[in-house]
Image 1 (tube, rainbow, N blue to C red):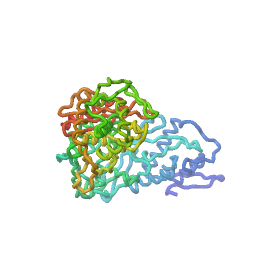
Image 2: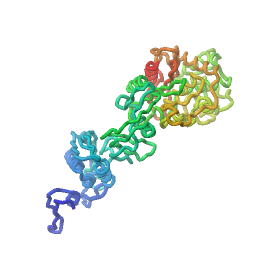
Image 3: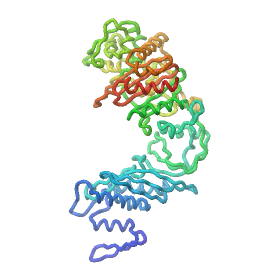
Image 4: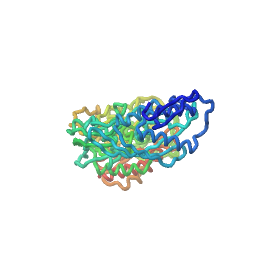
Length: 545
């Protein structure tokens, strides 16, 4: 028992004479009040409260918990949660592993059962100290078996960015910090370019030692997943950062950051067709999952760039050759239709069907290809999809599985089993524009000599010219006209709307090029491709032209 608390036996029960309440003292009091030491506060009392905690219970429980935590009483604080075992480990590590001292934790007014609070503390390690302030929140619930008001334990109670399996640490950083530069030598920071935060953390983890810096003293979130980089929260001493060159462009990145902020969930990537250099990567939300490079979704009609390339290469169609575009078509038991069930005259060409985004025109040609898996082969062999790209950080490199029947038909219009992200579609546009797949890179290959993916063949020049010209027409008078009106130079585009099961509004996709820059974007539940994703791509292309 902690010094200052004394227990005596009076009338056959424990009574407490308190000089300073510690963990043992709290347990005695709790037993007398019907509590217990279980992970959810199991009780021996016959009376168990139900219903939401009262305002008084929320205030009292949160105050006791925060006071115990601030005093360094990890065991006592953990007993006020519904998972004492995990809470005790995490709260104890707050002082022993993260080296946090002198914490002042101040609760704010409760909103329902949730209590926000601020933490002002000091982190000290081997003679280095620095103030640390942040905000978090807790929620008070009833114990399942006792009805006691308890803090609903989650790691985010300790710090809002802490997740299951993660912990706080302070010490010498495992890798030196980096100063990331764009291709022109301009410094890239997560403060100025929020979307780059997770990317810069990954680059540091992978290239920190190669960049020539020395490690500093830091507080960080240590991940339990080896593929997820640690995230620095506080720097006590900087050490010496190493310099890391990237292929990014600060101007294009700034435009991308601004463009995606207009939507709650949006991603965009820009790639230079002549080199494969990635010029911008931006996501909203800006922190966490890098959807622009790791997302996996059907890309809708933007996939018609690959479909048209395959059909023209096989001689099944040509940009100036007429194709049928009825309002709907059935293929092996599945019915496909055009947006708002439009149709085109039988004399209209493939260029018109491409520019107007006619689904049925492409599906009607599937039998003429005489190979249901032709699209998958074209995507892999020409456009490099699924070839294990080595960009410098983790990326999903697209997937077009071989399919048959109605599933193969769905793939022709970017639905079904196809999975892409903004990086993949920007690369597909770059390949169509240039005729040669150049694997996208974020970090120059000469830094580490990693092997880059190469396609088995290039797109024939005549095919590349036809597809590129169809994209020009789409930007000039087709579905991409409005979005691309503000973009100058030699420009082209393709729109896409991808239907998602259980989602009332389709995802908005758009990809385009201007001179030697290609970009692609996706906006979740954005509707038509030109309405939401189109302006995002246009803003990025304007910045890079």
